[in-house]
Image (spheres, rainbow, N blue to C red):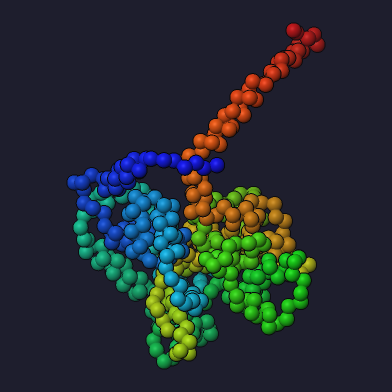
Length: 427
């Protein structure tokens, strides 16, 4: 029970003032600008945008500054601002097959059409503190020149885009528009397995939770099935319900807390799951966002956004309805959130246990447990509400404990007799 607390307005105003002073820090130090956060802390910005469900690097950087670097608070701020924005249209589904690649790796095949590109990654650093960063100030043109030299050397050492296009076209793997020059189309590694019928189909688990529900026993024809596959749950418009179809699960996991997903994904690898995954492909780059204009009759491009996508491949021994094959977990996020997308893909695969007829006996496979606790805004709010006045609740429990203490009758502690090796009991 909550109680109204009167007074304290001046104290709250003072708390806000102290918060502003804490945020500013030492006045002799230059102010940290939003642009600096946006340009030099991109990974934090990307996470805030992903879990805040709003692609706006500037506003995400502003939220980080306002929250003094508290990522969960920044996500809360961005999520709150998002609710004030009007929705005037729906964009077309992004086509990650046409991604302008900045990073693309695969742990399943060494040689893939188009090649692997390491891109910006911490994977091969030595995790040693770089003390030279302590001396950095102002604009450094040498860094830009070094990056350009690296790109040029990489281009000389590898096949050019034209060569890649020609070779891949000969193998019928890369397609390009003959009317204009464009980035090469890099096929997915999972497509190779799917062509050999070794990977589950895209639609096999998308809507199976609701179509297989015991409450729905009406036969579904091909037209209804096609309409169902083209309809996605929108968690921003309707609350999450159980059992949830895969479209709802993926939306919830995309907005979920990275640390939470990381722990669950890790648990599936340590005996609390039956998955042995392979990173089929991880790609990061820019994709075009387009919107269909009914008056024009065709879609127009609005711009580009940066996304990271991960396909995890897992072995599946099959059941009475499905043959042995590989199954797939999927993860996607705004910006460069590779760890988040990998963990999301692991949890997504684990949550497919029901559709695949597997036992649901691990934490990561329990749909309601996973999805009910994955949102850090909701979780933080519920935990933080314990700071609010609970005076009446505590007084009632205090009286109850006092009464129980008064009625308490201790039981005499009778120690058991100790038997010696000779068999004689000592008292």
